Structure formats: structure tokens, C-alpha cells
Image 1: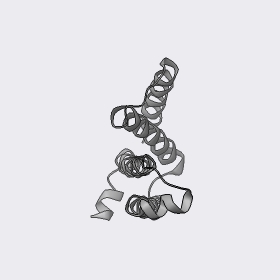
Image 2 (image 1 turned 60 degrees about the vertical axis):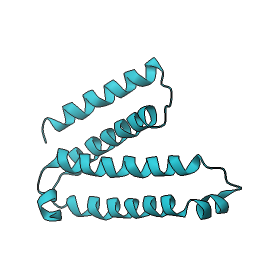
Image 3 (image 1 turned 90 degrees about the vertical axis):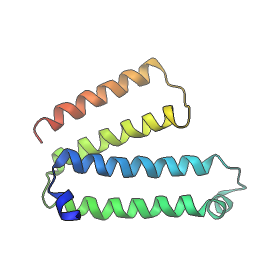
Image 4 (image 1 turned 180 degrees about the horizontal axis):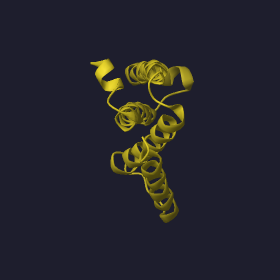
Length: 122
């Protein structure tokens, strides 16, 4: 299954990695909303969310390293990064109810335009 995903294209792989990364960030944001008395208490009281996030980060690292064998970094990284930013932005707004400014929305639109332009050649 992993090999099939690897060879499914740059945009699909970038979206897969971005979704994992955004989910991991959402887990940490969720965990950070609980009161804690310092760093150690934060990790101990939120060990499931923190542990899952670390496991996801580890998987992303190894998967990203693996797919670089078949996908150009000059295409994958900008798409992956842009999609990650957009997904985290959307999670912040729609899941956590964070407020955004017109400038942030303009920046998000520019990121989408950049991802579309870069992915056209992928």
C-alpha cells in the first residue's frame, strides 16, 4: 500500500503528509488548552496527545525521506509546506474558532495560488 501511495504523484503525497502534520498540530493545540503547571506537567497530563503527535512526526520524517527517492524536492517541499500551512490555518479557524484578519485571509489566498502554480508542473 505504501509503495502505491508513493507512486501516486507529488500532490497526493504532499496532501497526505500535510493532513498528517495538520492533525498532529491540532492534537498539540487541543492538549495545550488544558491547564498544566509547567512543561513536565503538560507532557504527563497530555501524554496521549503528545505521544501521538510525536509518532506522527516520526512517521512523516521517514515517509518524507522515502518518497524523496521518486519525487523532486523542489516540487514536493513547496506543495507540502503550503498545504500544511493552509490545513493548519483552516483547523485553527473552523475547529478551534480562532479569529482571522483580512491580511491573514489574503496571505492564505496567496499560498493557495502558489501551491496551484507549483503543482501545475508536478
